[in-house]
Amino acid sequence: MLYETPRYRTSGERHLLVELGASVSLEANFRAIALSRALEASAGLGTEGIKAIIDTQPSFTTVLIEYDPKLLTQEGLKQLCSHHLSQLVQAEQIQLDSRLIEIPVAYNDRWCRACFEDYCKTIKPIEDNLELICRINGLDSIEALINYHSSIEWWVGTVGFIAGLPVLMPLDPSCQLRAPKYDPPRTWTPKGTVALGGGFTAVYPMVTPDGYQMLGRTPLRLFDPQSDQAPFEESPVLLSVGDRVKFVPISEARFEEIEREVTAGTYRYSISAAQSVSLDELQQQPLPLAA
Amino acid sequence: MISSPKLTPINGAVQTSSPVVEVLKGGLETTVQDYPGREGYLQLGIPRSGPMDPKSFQLGNQLLQNPADAAGLEIQFVGPKLKFLRATAIALSGANNRPKLNQQAIPMWSTVVIKAGDILSFGHARSGARTYIHFAGGLDVPVVMGSRSTFTRAELGGLEGRKLEKGDRLSSFLTKVLETSHPIHQIQPLQRPAFSHQWTIELLLGPHDDELSKGDIQQFIQTNWRVSSRSDRVGYRLEGADLSFSHNAHHHSPDRDEHPSNKIDYGCHLGTLLFCGQTPTILMVDSPSLTGYMAPFTVCQASLWKVGQARPGDYFSFQVIDPETALRRQSDINRTLAFG
Image 1: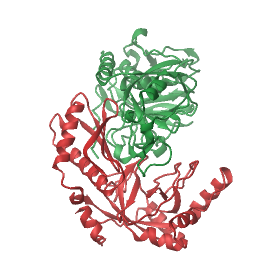
Image 2 (image 1 turned 90 degrees about the vertical axis):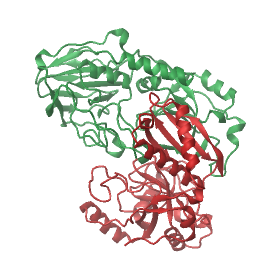
Image 3 (image 1 turned 120 degrees about the vertical axis):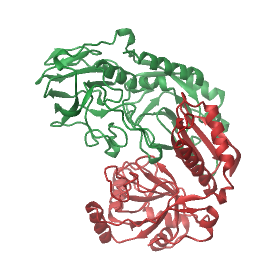
Image 4 (image 1 turned 135 degrees about the horizontal axis):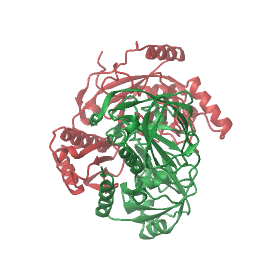
């Protein structure tokens, strides 16, 4: 549900949290991303007042804005946000630049299983992650779960927590794949793990604690601040808000092959050129992946 | 992403550098940091990093007439042992951890002239958690995403993205000033940050103060909170009271998990005070950029250095101030930093 007027929340002297709706939806997320991009575009105009915007962090229902209170008052920033929001068309018709990116995943892999076994041994015994997801979602086999997770298109709703970690939601609103989180959370998760929590999929750019149920592992790099080669020549992170993701099942052998290619810099990431998309178009027909 | 402005050229320094120290012992966690760190990368999940006590750090750079963005070392609790490879000048700021040069005590908050072969070592601080070593000209490590600050969790910036280890060598930019005749500056006691074990931290209400009742807020303010040993550059955890949650916080949207402190993931930052279940947690310089916990308060900019200097076992009492007062506090600090 989208609010008629946004709720502005003070987050210290130099941050404003703009809340656009009360619950997670693609509509709210599209609006948040569009507001964030409009503010960043205006930051590039170079007039004194608007340069005051330092950073924006769009998420599912909110945009966090960092601004310089010496150059722009909170009241002025609210007016700027209201102006941009009034310029936006209905959420379903908002056009956003979006790329389609293929992420190869070794589902039900030995590295995540080792992490799971470590948790069972050192913290407490729990149900197998993939079997648990199957049971909760009425899927009759792990193959059916892998088919389902890799057949739908995922939307990058936000990127953050740490170093380029994307949180994805299904573009198809009828998808109801859900999973509870670990309690207590894991102390570590293998780098590249693809995991499900709530209705979201996350991909871990590095070893990190977390509580999503592990599905598999990708050999791709999600964060590389040192590289000036594709796909990191313009941004140190692979996935940005507004990108779409298709997960492609691979074997453990293929995982190791791709991992070597990634290290050698010879792996060709499958990333389509950015094209302007709206929620209406995306939900009517999936866009083809560019060659 | 909004790109950060390029670093300003190092004024009064020649843009070459040479090894200035060799690390004999790394200390507990000694890292290269600069101020203000990385700006503009929240939406990539890259935190600001930089010094936990920006006030001491900036004062220290001024003792050497360094540019504002000159990088130095942050020491946490246990200091390193360093051997100087050439003549230079240094300054020490932050917590007084009994610095010694060749076994002789040297002053904090003062320029110190250094000869090749000198050995710098440290004892322990009685109050305060972080000490800074500043080098004339500033440390020369690669600028990554607009900053030289180390973010160890992502192996980013600083020296190979990690804390210092035995055998490391660090370079600093050469300055035009002759090392042997480096002007001696001092920060007078009244201008130095005042260290304590009982800190008063000023807060602003928001972003989620509306989810607490007036009684909840009173309960939080009247509690003397103890700093947990599980506190670091990512966040400071507090212990002290069982929090109850008012009626407001129990109106869940179905996307939230069970606990009333859970929210739909939203952007957070340095200074955000989260209620992680029952545990208040202040996000610090290496914090995540998204959270699923509610944040009823935010620490004022002018109080952040105190959090960064608090030791586990210290106490925090909180005061809520209004945004105008908070901005005035910060400009007061900026004025004291604007000497020289």
